[in-house]
Structures are given as C-alpha cells and as structure tokens.
Amino acid sequence: MKFGKRLQAAMAESETDACEYLDYHALKKRLKECHEAHADSTRLAPPGRSARPSTADLAAVDNYAPFLRDLEHAIDAVERAYWTNVRVARAATALAASQYWAELFDAGVIPAAPGPPIRPHDAGTATRPAVLAATRLAARMARIDARLDRADLARTWSKAGVRKILKKIDRATGWGTVAVVLDKVADTRRFWWGTELEEARKEVARLRHEARARRWESVVAS
Image (cartoon, rainbow, N blue to C red; front, side, top):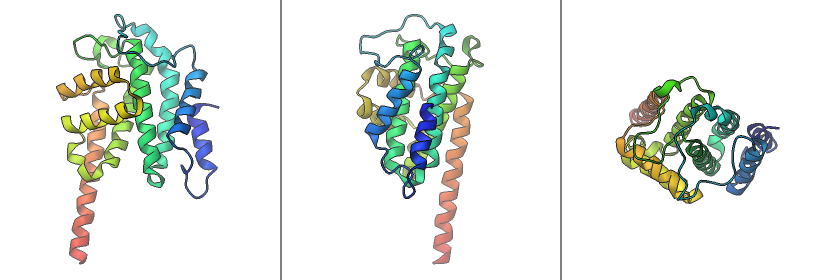
C-alpha cells in the first residue's frame, strides 16, 4: 500500500480524532517507508552541507514523480483532517517540505550554485511529471501554511513569512543546505512554481475576505 493510502487508512481507524495518534515520529516512520518503496528513484540520506549536485539532469527528474505523488496523497489526507489536529498538520507539512525539496535538490532541479532555481517554464520542463507534482505539492503546502497562520495572513507571502516557513523546516530536519537554497529564493521574493502560486494567493485572499466578513457580521449582530 502506498504511503498516502497507508496514512489515510490509519486516519480512518480513529473515530474520535482522525489524527489522534499520528505524531511527528509516526509520520517520519511512514515517510521512511515511502522512501523504501521508491528505493530506485529516491535516497534516504539528506544532502549534507558539502553536497553539491552537478548540472541538472532533467531527464532523470521524472524518476521522482512516484515519490512526489505519494507525498501529495499524504498531504491530501492531512489537509482533509486539518481541523481535527493542527499539530499533525504542522508536522506533516514540515516533513513533506523538507523531504521533497531535498529530493529535488539531489536531482539538480534546485541548483546550489548562484543563480535562480530552474522554473517549470524553463528548458521545456513544464510538462515533466515530477515538476508538475512538485508544483502542485508546493501550492498545497502553501495553502495549509496559510490556514495555520490565518491570524497573520498578510505576512504569509512576504519575505518574513517565507523565513518563518524555513525556520519550521530547519527545526524539523536540521538540513541547513535546503534552507539556504530556499532562503535565496525568498530573497528574490519570487517562487519558482509560477502560476500555481497565484492560485494559492487567490485562496489566501478568499480566506481573508471570509474572515473579515465573519468579524463584521459578529459586530453587527452584537
């Protein structure tokens, strides 16, 4: 059974709280199983501080598509159960973020050398399954993070908001290399996953509008 399906099945077993027992360590164990299921296309060891991928081999990137699809299923499951357990949603988001960024870093999609990350519309990569999967996953994670920080949504897309996300990833993994690469992207204030980000921005705007409307209704009612 795939990682995402296992997570959904485990969640379904609990009648009172869909994520009651799925703590950080349980999610980490399931993510390791996901890696092992895709041993030919992923590696368990995160990139070290001295690890530097060579020139991106875009033909090999598609090998990461199954791994990313499993992560997407996992995020789907956690997102559906978000309102039942915020702590698990935070842990799953941090885990998925660190792991899939590390895998793309290893594949050379995110270069460690100076220069902007490869964007989906560059070098004919827009239709590559792994790039599309990473794009969808990034947008989904952004929406989850926006909900976690709905009290301060205005900062979610600012440099400060991005740095806050990076700190979450660093605390969860200690993988400084990934944070450095992402930090460079944050400095440019432009994310590499393109149009999917705009959809996430619209979702954030919608959530903000609904929150303001609810506050106004409560004021009028009182």
